Length: 329
Image (cartoon, rainbow, N blue to C red; front, side, top):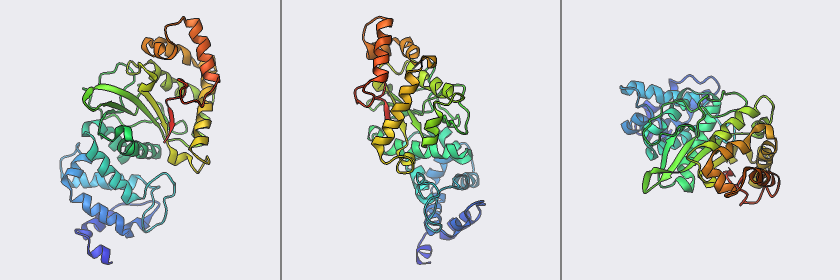
């Protein structure tokens, strides 16, 4: 009770937490850390305007804060023990990450992601948690140079497109694939923000989802998105794209360590590449700059031979162009 009594606006924080209907975890209403964090954020008009720029009153903003908390049903809390899933932060730390993330990036770029945290499926929560972690902690992004979240992979029009499309990740178990293929975020040159450095895809997958990549009913969805990356005019060099698989979901639940997880994922991509029905080579060949980067100035028939060699040999080698964009972080 001392921590409670020493918290400014603790009664407000408790009332707001108590006003949330928790279908799975009523212990959150006794969590001092959550009450303290909610009290802090509810009295922060800057934070409220960042998570709810689409409403006008403080009451509406606070309702949105409550919706963000309620929607993340699987995160644990100080009063209820560890998270029910290992890759999700405790609920008060999750709110702190949202605060850090929204302070780090421009509102119009991340509104779609925040809306998905408010209203989305649990797959959106997982993808959003990974996105926020990568956006804030990945050294490549530490200087605040993410240009756009959920960029369309076709007909690039960055940087003049504020995007409030809900964050629809390619969840092969539950969610539909957006008909307009999208990446997860663009990284841009800190000194010249109109210059795109890389197009990045985040995969919040367990091993079960990785296994579904090759399933006959799913493979077209995954390869469709992958081919959209290869065709994108933003990707003139294989270094311009990255696929990040969520380390926190894969280790230690499914794999012993990062090395084992990465080898498994790369072997899955090997099976994609070596099935000609998937049309991966053709997608690369359509992108003239990318094909020159990977194969050099050679004939299509010779490039097909080289593609086959890259696809089947030394797939764990860091320099192999068909696999170097795949990461587990």
